[in-house]
Length: 223
Image 1 (tube, rainbow, N blue to C red):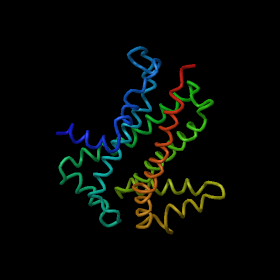
Image 2: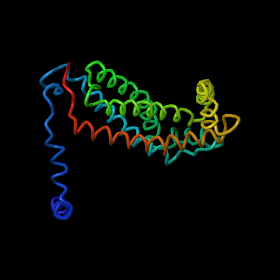
Image 3: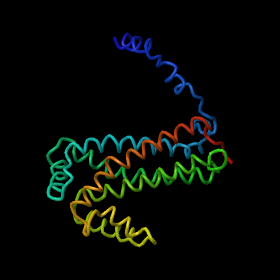
Image 4: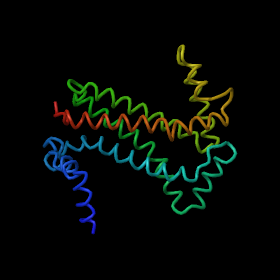
């Protein structure tokens, strides 16, 4: 049955060459752990992508129950953890995944740096990768406030004061993120919008560009 459906789609859209091109792409020997134990350091990029997918899927689940207002935010998180089946597990995955993905990105960045993979002709991909790193940091920052507990509230106040200390643009950045004179309802709404809509959109665009350049330029060899 599935084969018939696939053949029907393939006759009209010719999808086989697309996935065959990906599936048949040869992996360089120096990044194959079966040939070189040191090739494991080349897995950090793939692990980062894998954790990012988990973050997206778990985040989609969390948004089905989260209420982004200062009256119901904390209660909705508590309800998710105590009343929804597997809610605590999914939120735990999202919570710890946010830290783990930063660690994996850092290790991936160090591998790229120490193997000289940022050099020509891959300079643009290095820039895109650094932008991805900062976007991921932004996702972690904006997501930290959403539970609306004491730790999240005061950590966000500290973060906003750090942003305010930036020369010239500091006050503008703080006002944009805070949305008012205090950390309150508008701050939570802005952080939620950035965390769920704006930053993920930028992340996906940068990831597509990152993968296209890797595909065209190939994986760099060892020094």
